[in-house]
Structure formats: C-alpha cells, structure tokens
Image 1 (cartoon, helix red, strand yellow):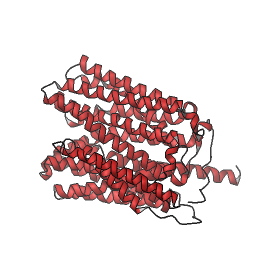
Image 2 (cartoon, helix red, strand yellow):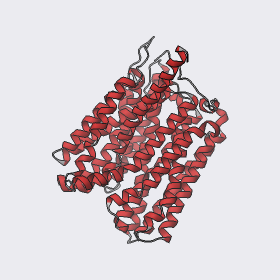
Image 3 (tube, helix red, strand yellow):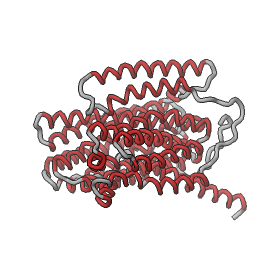
Length: 496
C-alpha cells in the first residue's frame, strides 16, 4: 500500500467513525422526544405535577426544538458545524442533568425547554456534516444510517423509559430517564472533539447571521406550532387565531429574505433552494409524511394502555416491530436510492399504508390483549416502508443543496418534520378523542385514527409521484449519478 493509499484509508475510517459520533448524539436527542411519554405518571407522583405541567414537559421540548433548527443550521454554516455541534451537545447533556435534578414541576418545564433548544442545535449540524464529509453513494449510505437511527430512537423510547422506571421506582424513576444521557453525552463530546472535521479557512467577505430573519422566522414558527402542540390542553377555538398570525409573520419573513438577497446580504434561508423542485417537494413530503407517521405511536400506545390494559413497558415493547423494520428499511434505502431514486420513496409509502391497514384489520379480528402480537407483523411492514421512505427522501431532497448551505437546508427539512408531527397529532388526536367522547369503543377510535393516518400517507404518496414526474425539471441529482462505487468527500466550498 502506498503512502497516499494509507492516508486515504485512514481518512475513510475517520469519516465513518465521526459519523458514528453524530449518530450517537442524534439517537440520544431524538430518544428524549419519546422516552418521557411513559414517565409522565411517575413525574406526577414524584413532583406533584398537574396535567398542564406534564403537557409542557412533552410539548415544550418539541416547541423549542422546532424554533431553533433553521437559525442553528445557518449558524453552523457560518461559524463551523463542529463548533455548533459541540455547543449543542454540551448544552443538551447539561440540561439533561438539570432535568433530573429539578426540584419542582416548574423547573423541570424550564429545563426541558432548554433541552429542546439544545437538541435543535445538534440536529441540523448532523445533516450538514454528512453533506460535508460524504458524496454520492457514500452520502446516501450515511443518510440511510441516520434514518435507521431516527426510526430506532423514536420507537425505542417508550420501552426504554418503561424499563428505567421499573428499575428505579415509580416515584423517582423519571429522573433516570434524563440521567442516562450524562455518560452518553460526555463520551460523545470527547469523541467529537477528536474526530469531527474543522471548518475550512474562510476567504472573502465574512457573512453575518441575519438576526431580523431569525426573529421573524422564530415568531412565525412559534405562532404556527403553539396551538398545534397545545391542542388538547387549550380548550376553545381562540387558539386557532394564531394560525393567520403565523401566515402573516412567515410572509413577512419571506419578503425580508428576498430583500436580503436583492441587496447582496446573506439571508438566513437561501430562497433559491425552493427553485429546485426536488427540494420543495421533498420538504413538503417530509411535512405531510411526519404528520402521519409520528401519530401512529401516539394513538397506538394510548389504545394499548387505556383501551386494552397494557402497562407502560408492554405498550412500549409493542412498538418495537415498527422500530426494527424502520432501521432495516432505512439501511436498505440508503443503498438502493442510488439505483432507484424517487421510485423507492413511492414503494416505501405504499408499504406504510399497507402495514397500517393490516394493523386496523388486526384490531378488528383479534380483540383484547392479543392485539399486540397480532399487529406485530403489520407494524414490521409499516416500519420497513417508513425506513425506505424517510432515508431516501432526505438524500434526494438535499442532493442538490450546496455544502455551504447544508446546515440551513437540513434545518428546513427537520422543521417540516416537527410542524408535520404537531399538526398530525392534533388532527389524528382529535379524531381519536372525539370518538371516545361519544362513548365509542377504544378499538374503533384507534381504527378511525389510523384510517386518518392512511389518508395522510396517500397525500404524501401523491407528492412523491409528482416529484418523480417532474424530476426532469431539475438537474439530475448527484446521488443518482453515483451509481455505486467509492466517492471522495466534496472539496470545501471556497466561500465557507
């Protein structure tokens, strides 16, 4: 082996090990969005928290997570993704410990808000670093691994939380849901210091963060998400008055960003990205799909615990087939997207719809406590379809994004996920709870909720078909040109 070959092999190993650090941090931050769900009764007992407090423990995390994604992604683009990743990871680890030590419900809510913001700092750096470190088929494989981690973390949270509470006790077990992040966070931070690539030396004009754009986007996203995440807690219709306010604020943000571009100033969000049909439809598909996908766990675990009588750990374990299928599907999708492109996303969405229809049939045919086993195979199919959807869509959506804008673009993609999740839970939850309020059976309420989810998946399928038909309007995505084989990382962008 020559000296240059040895250096190349060492660099390859370093990149993949650095990706492992990013995936570890991503798993930990995404896990915290679902692991607390089964810990809420423990929090109520241990802290004397009321329904409003525990609602904010869940929704506050989602809210601040969504608020900081795009600004944090842009900050990483400007000041270095390694530095932003380390900042977010350190803040997440510290606030996790603070959550565990919280002496009252009010302090816990405050620390959860900060923890959600820290998670929002980490997420866009991960997608940006993948764009920076990998290219072509390797980038697709890396996004496939990221999709697998996302699927596992979402579904692994409930059983992990249930197990920790069972081991640590009903009153204080919820604290260990947060303490578990400390050793993982410290190990990931030390590894990130050593392995993550530093930002290349920037030349030319130094860009600054668009603070008015940050304020406008933040206010618009807040007005949009707040009534969605608090849909069950805020009674009355007045909350929906925030939605037109959100539309106005986001329209002003769009006009401001156009003005920034016309005057040669660096915008928070490069609106030129939306001239790419693949990026625009990919973001919309992400928003719609997550409005359906994440609500499955919401209504299914509620049904198993309240309708069938499962305890928290059993209800959480019943979601594992979906997680396993999602991890396998995402890994396979990362490899197959190079060859099949958008057709793979269409096939994945079809698998999700088919699997959910199977769950509906299982609830009908196997009433009672055996439903968890009966629904395992359909959930496995739906999970595999989900992995084959999310990972390739991420790869294809970001394939035409310049590396210097990768953080902000990744922030847009994940923000769409958060908004979609909040909207989906509000819509599907309304269907589920409305049927129960009319003295309907829990099984029928679940079936109606899942039928609503299937309808949402069909809308996402329409977007995927539109993206496939219009693929000729954009330049061919880089990932579909790299039909396998080894590819080197992109050269650093001279403006970054």
